[in-house]
Amino acid sequence: MEISILQVISGICVLAGRFTSEPGTIRKHVIMRKTVGAEPVKPKYQWIPSAIDARIRVIAWLSLVTEVVIIGTGGAVRLTGSGLGCPTWPTCVAGSLVPTSEMGIHGVIEFGNRLMSGVVGIVAVLAVVLLWRLRRERKDLFTLSIILVVGVLAQALVGGVTVLTGLNPFIVGFHFMASLIMVCISAVLVHRVYVAPGPRVRVVPVAFAGLAHATSFVVALTVLMGVVTTASGPHSGDAAAGRTGFNAELLEHLHAWPGYATLVLTIVLLGASVRGKLPIRFFVLTLFLIELVQIVVGLLQANLGLPPVLVGVHMVLASILAAAMTVVVLNLKAPSRSSADVAQMAMNATGRN
Ligand code: HEM
Image (cartoon, rainbow, N blue to C red; front, side, top):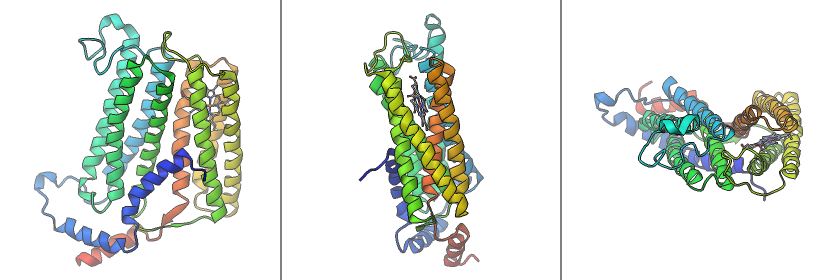
């Protein structure tokens, strides 16, 4: 059975969400709400939300944005040849946490990326804090926020290993793939702060769902081949860094073909969703437009000798595309009860209507 990386990621996150999707969960949900409602909350913690509000939605979006931005800053490190601008880790240079003046602009760029991981970490911790009082009712959201915190810590370690191995191309590639997974997890968080918890049902024809999953598999394959192409190409991050030794020109084609297949599959999805007036059509259209731009940028960079700016744009677009694909897959299903129903049931159970 073919399973794409995106499907695996979505699967992990959906499984996390299943805590509130089991039959009879609404009852559990209601009981939990009672418990939370009954829990005495110290006045100094009362600012922490007890229901999904604008602050939680903003932090979910911030998480997605910062995860994408750090892909851009990480790309800037590699594409400016600053990969070893800070030659050690966790300090920048022996005896100094921050870059010294001798390390020049490369030290500043590399250190800037390290600072950016701090920003991503702060956003992830804030998400955990804001979801704290909902940790039982919205176990799915809380679990996702914990995964994001653990992910930032793990990524900081992988970043350290990247530096300490002198920018081994396979580790650099792994670091980038892990960053994309973090983007996808943030996309799940954003999606889930807008939908009601509880059981989910398929809202598209079964063939459409199958095709969407197949498309996500091809997107994951395209990304993987792109990463291997990069690892074999000229932008290593430092003149002394090694390359895979694979044939970059051949890989470029092996990467581009599934890229075109992705576009064809998405056009079929778009046609079917517009004809069937499926609610998912807006997300499919977004995915299609991102893919179109991504392919144009890919072709331009390949034909213009890989200018760093275009390679950087291609990297960032790949992360936005992965997020869009994740959202399409998530929208194949919808909660069988609306938020209003769930809130009403909770109010009934606590006698607050
Ligand atoms: C849906 C379509 C596409 C997606 C999702 C995609 C994604 C990616 C990704 C994730 C990378 C690796 C970035 C990195 O590790 O820094 C990459 C690299 C690359 N892509 Fe694409 N790509 C697509 C289409 C194309 C097309 C049509 C071309 C045209 C030939 C292309 C040319 C390249 C090249 C040349 C590289 C290597 C750049 C380097 O050596 O630094 N891509 N792509």
